[in-house]
Length: 143
Image (cartoon, rainbow, N blue to C red; front, side, top):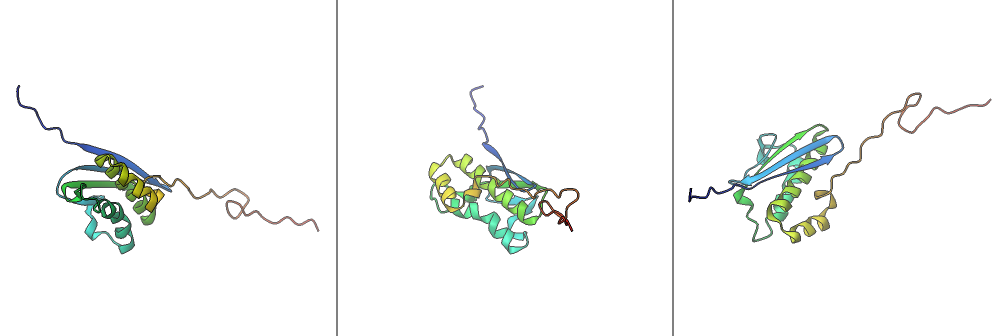
């Protein structure tokens, strides 16, 4: 039993936005980013693709981080397309920081946009009974 099996490093992280929950998995690979089994290049609309690519683009600025040697798989459920994109972007950024253990990358993410690492848990307030919305009530008339 003299041979050592090489342990594969896998990192799992979660990102949330409104009702959307994204789970990102990073492992060694060929530089493919998939969101719900779709490659990043085919995701529409363009705004969503740009949001999802931000964490990888920022990490690629570091010479010691080789984004072409890792695979990112993201599974997103719930919410709308923009909430899903922001949840996935948070999950990707968190997993990249965990994968690289680079404190400088973490600081740059926080300076660029705090929501890359911190989930934005604001949700829509519930409509109340006897009212038109969450806060608006029917006006009361005394005469």
